[in-house]
Image 1 (spheres, rainbow, N blue to C red):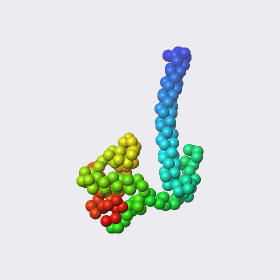
Image 2 (tube, rainbow, N blue to C red; image 1 turned 45 degrees about the vertical axis):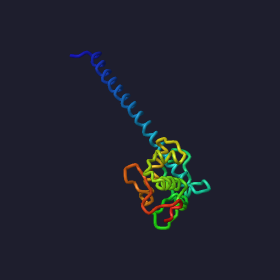
Image 3 (cartoon, rainbow, N blue to C red; image 1 turned 180 degrees about the vertical axis):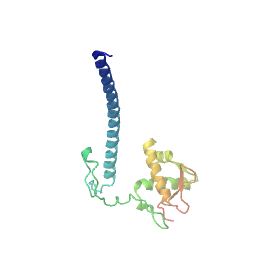
Image 4 (cartoon, rainbow, N blue to C red; image 1 turned 90 degrees about the vertical axis):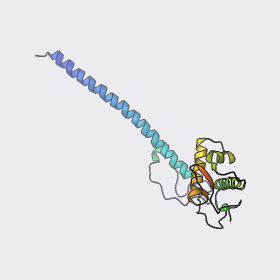
Length: 178
């Protein structure tokens, strides 16, 4: 028959193992919680930045206030007004000038028109960044790529090869009117 001290030692050992296991699980949960909080804060910051981009020209967010405290960031936003003038890219049609586009889109079209006029072929986004006076860092290049793809989708650019852009057939001249 086991001794009382031996039984107490067994129960103590089992309790210690359980405590150690729970501590390990708590540490894992703390790490997971920290990662989830970081992700949540990044999404809240992204939403605030989008709100700033969609803000009206006077600098106030159109239709809603941006949550200052990240804990308020998960509240449902109020409906917003339309995007700023010239921030959308209309589908190209005959006679539609480039002036309806924002300056960034006009720069892309102008660079490609110059390139076409000199018969130099398609451009990649890194070249577009340099020609636009931007640093060819990934964030700037990807922003230009996004804009170029939007121009392709709206019929203003052509992307014959992946990542290489030219003016769409029928689009010519400095003002885009053909």
